Image 1 (cartoon, protein in one colour):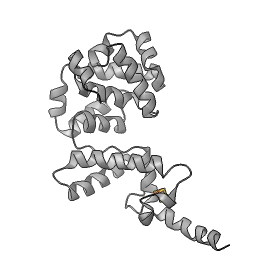
Image 2 (cartoon, rainbow, N blue to C red):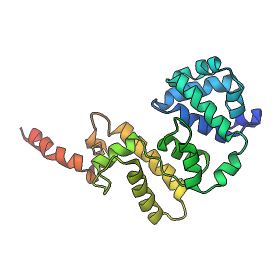
Image 3 (cartoon, rainbow, N blue to C red):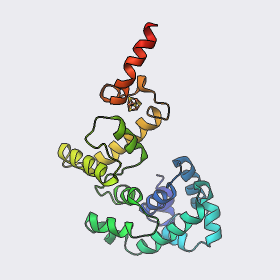
Image 4 (cartoon, rainbow, N blue to C red):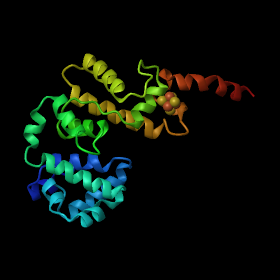
Length: 216
Ligand code: SF4
């Protein structure tokens, strides 16, 4: 994130992270970047900026991120709820802060955890579609689709291994999962080059087929 915008505008960079977490729902980050740039160019990349912008204009500015009517409504809701108390909000215990976010219409567990981890620097592991995908491929004891079960598994294991670096490690592992899923574990997986192939049950299933093909 380019903090110089916030230094110049006197705004809080955490608000940009929260705005980004809402805009990224159901879309690629490249589209979010375009919407964030529009908000920046209009000098409204903050909670007060969002709240002082007409609904129609806000929709136009965030249009590249898709679902702009819905997202404009969600941005206003979150900006209103957090605008005067962001420091206090992040000082609460995680379950309380998380449930306050989940009570806002349109904020699900993934968005709530992204806000807690990336804006609040609080140890709340983010489970996204990429995490779910890798969980179905790797022999992890979380062969379930439940957000909570997957989150509990990662938090338990990572906290055990890195008890004093939870926030950094949660961010790093999430980034590695995204990179692996984007670069290798796609619709047509590139198992041959995937760094996880030695541990992946899916790759093990594919291996005999490849051997059969190679000896023909
Ligand atoms: S080895 Fe293949 S199936 Fe397994 S995680 Fe990597 S790309 Fe996905």
